[in-house]
Image 1: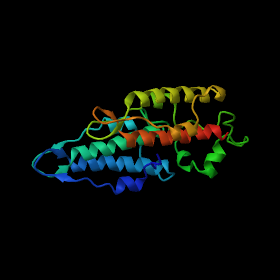
Image 2 (image 1 turned 135 degrees about the vertical axis):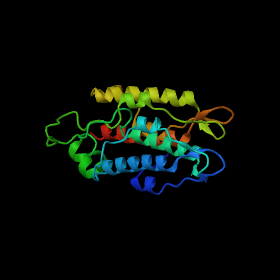
Image 3 (image 1 turned 90 degrees about the horizontal axis):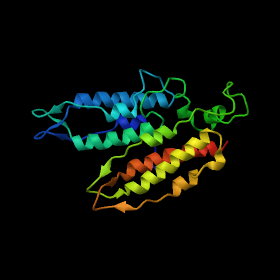
Image 4 (image 1 turned 180 degrees about the horizontal axis):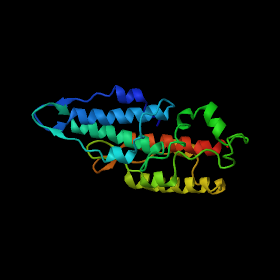
Length: 226
């Protein structure tokens, strides 16, 4: 897997080809959305927060004006990239409604320093006590997760991925209930899982699935390290 989470620089440096003789997306509209995505990632990494965090659902529902006489961004390139953004934001817990401000800033410091302080910490975690940090991925995030389908390129078998996500949803549910003995998946299981690939029929976009699984494995590891 090994897909890294998106960074503000990934958004800032993103370039799309322009089309002139066929419809494209209005460049200003797309750039404005990318600005919001970039500022959200900056806030998630502990930087200044310049407005409400954008959610995966908002990105998924974005609509752009189309251009005909003037240059516009290639629609398929923009759509593909936004699919990656949607999976990334959903994996960080920004699936549907924008969470309240407090749970999010700790996320970027998921490294040893801050993650350790808020996590299963031996007590000084500001009275948060036993349950540890707020989850970055909930059973609902898994249930609501959607992947783009591929038709002309190799994809992952949809049924296999869906069945695996059912197990992931159940595992997160019992972990949040404090019953780890009932979990049916571990972080290692997530890292090692392999799905059949499809060619002649639609399948899930492998890059999106892999990115989501990376975040899922990281979330399970947080519980296992307690």
